[in-house]
Length: 144
Image (cartoon, rainbow, N blue to C red; front, side, top):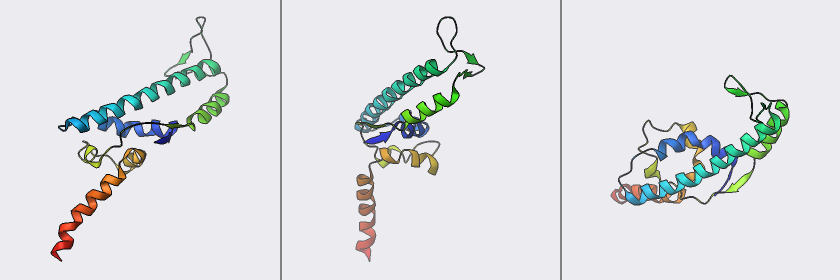
């Protein structure tokens, strides 16, 4: 699946709800665990790059570590950081993950909002959902 790093970060709140749910179906649980590992690994790499950019554009202490101002890092060149970070976040990667079947998301508690669903759209197995919808309509059509 092709996805921008920005999209991946935006999908994390919704994906975390799915990743932390218990699943009775072992095959489904396994596929979600594999997807979780790959997504989290990619995000760890993204965070490492963010910290490198903070070191590049931020104020550093005597040990060469970024200086915090409250909960934010002090930046010498905020525009330079933002420009390079935004450019980096547009990077498109090929993420080899299992696509999520609808059964993985339909019982999420609390339920996913429409906004959350839109962030994980690329992770959802649309073909399987279309097949489920067709199968659900068959008995109704046969009755007519």
